[in-house]
Image 1: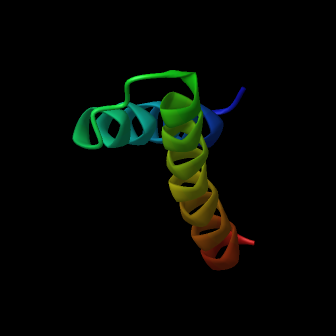
Image 2: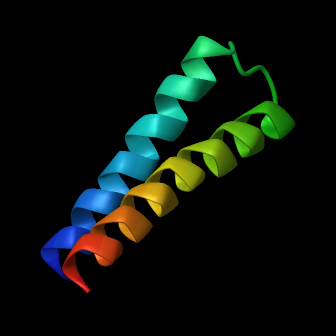
Length: 54
């Protein structure tokens, strides 16, 4: 794993955790949705980075 992949993984995990806390995730379905949304944030960041760096 390179440096960018590690950072993007950390962004996804942090985003998912904060989203789950914000919506008071109570079950697996809530946490799954928070994980997907957190992953989406990291995906947007990766695409933006790739657009700028090639």
